[in-house]
Amino acid sequence: MKRIALRFLSLLICLLLWHLASSNQVDLGFVSFKQLPSPEQVSSEALDLIHSKKFLAHLNASILRVLSGFCLATVVGISLGLSIGRFAWASNFLLPPLEMLRPIPAVAWIPLAILMFPSSEVSMIFITFIGALFPILLNTIHGVEAIDQRLIAAARSLGCKRGTLFYEIIIPAAASNIFTGLAIGMGTAWFCLVSAEMIAGQFGLGYYTWSSYTIQNYPAIVVGMLLIGLLGMASSLLIRYVARLVMPWQTLVVKRNG
Amino acid sequence: MVDQGCFEISRLSIRLGLGKQAFTAVENVSFSNQPGEFICILGPSGCGKSTLLSTMAGHVASSQGAIKLDGQLITKPNADIGLVFQQHSLFPWQRVIDNVAFGLKMRGINKSERHRQAREMLELVGLSGFEQHYPAQLSGGMQQRVEIARVLINTPKVILMDEPFGALDAQTRLSMQQFLLSVWEGIKTSVIFITHDIEEALFLADRLLIMSQRPGRFIEEIPLDFARPRTTELLATPRFVQLKQHCLTVLQSQNHL
Ligand SMILES: Nc1ncnc2c1ncn2[C@@H]1O[C@H](COP(=O)(O)OP(=O)(O)OP(=O)(O)O)[C@@H](O)[C@H]1O
Ligand SMILES: [Mg+2]
Image (tube, rainbow over all chains, first blue to last red; front, side):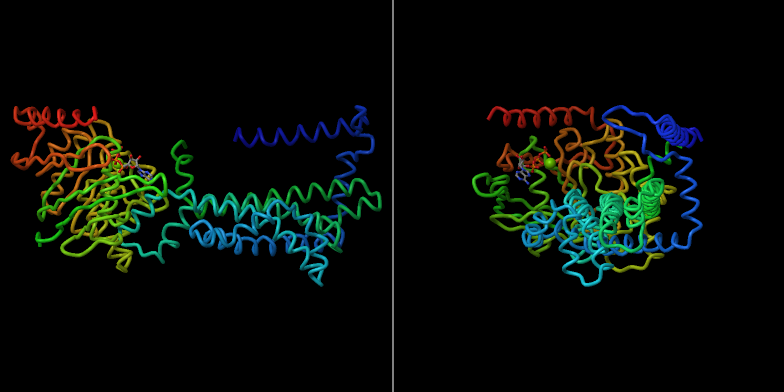
């Protein structure tokens, strides 16, 4: 109860500071809040948006893109990560190009993506895919490499064949790292989606935010930003929730302490 | 049934490491065990005891010599050779009952049957009622009991134990030693048990082998004919104390090399 109260309090304080900064038109010289829309303006803009026909279209477009890119990245990232973490040949063969692509920010892929994919929809999904892929891949590799070798030895000595080892030992043992990768990947997927939509979208929250800027509707920019933040947070929470369902043994200590 | 579980190890050497870092961990070791015999291997830290045991379990390749179990060359791990580690190696994501039943699952036995056998096994090791716990919810001694149950359920021909009680406190360790003997007296499977605790070795074994510093070789063999079942009173008998002193001298002579 206390925890929840504390969390709400922190949100309230942020809101209050925002309100004070914008209503008093605070100007600190190096940063000025004169142009900053107030919470009141933003919430009325948000209400307008929610009641408009376009709202669901924006929301759907963004969620669909993030989900497609993220799911694709999950499948590719986990399967590549498991092989690279487990087999020396896969690591030698696959890691060099991946290591080279990794430092390239997903945003830098946008021009190429537009050239490569005739459909702008696919190119945006590709950007979110790239964004989510590396955290998932790297955490999966790390998870497999960090497996206690004794667990594998024990399983083998109990009659576990090499083939079943993946399903019985490697995946569950790496699960916690894999989920860390998924949670981070979900965050970067949103991050990258918004950049992609700013360039190539017709709908979506990133497009909404950017187009509000071009038509100088400042409260709407903040609405867009807050919605993106909210959705990003909600999807991370969802992953954490799934992780707890799938890995009940991870939360034992919490249970013990009441 | 006890004409099984006989290792024949002849002129075994094990080299570890690659290139310039390569070194001989175990050198020219030969020994064999009787069916149902309880052998303890005692040796200074780093002398290659774990390496020898891993090779016997089929996890580490030998560089010379051969290891046979009941006439069969050992090339890879299998369920006939049970392995127990110093720190438990239970699967943290499985409940106790599924950990114990793991070997049966690998043999394709259906769930209700393997859970039935696992429950029996848990009763044998005194852990009825803990079926649904996860390993992290058990004490160190309980975890080792589960670990032992998980190996026993496979009815291995031989059980290899690498300092299985090394991480436990003195009190728990003593009760685990008695527990192990009582279980073993019921099944009489061959056991090879590694320790660097002299008292533990003398208390448990039919025969004691002492290893040298690295590269490990056997430098002494002591048959122990203390009557079984053994009780803690044994620890205070003159013969026991004398042997303990002797082992200490042998081990200490190693430290000065
Ligand atoms: N994978 C490895 N690579 C290189 N050296 C190793 C490796 N494993 C063990 N060693 C070395 O090989 C020697 C034998 O190790 P081993 O673990 O068999 O000793 P031990 O007798 O079991 O020691 P302890 O009583 O401390 O468990 C040690 O000197 C150790 O440093
Ligand atoms: Mg060791």
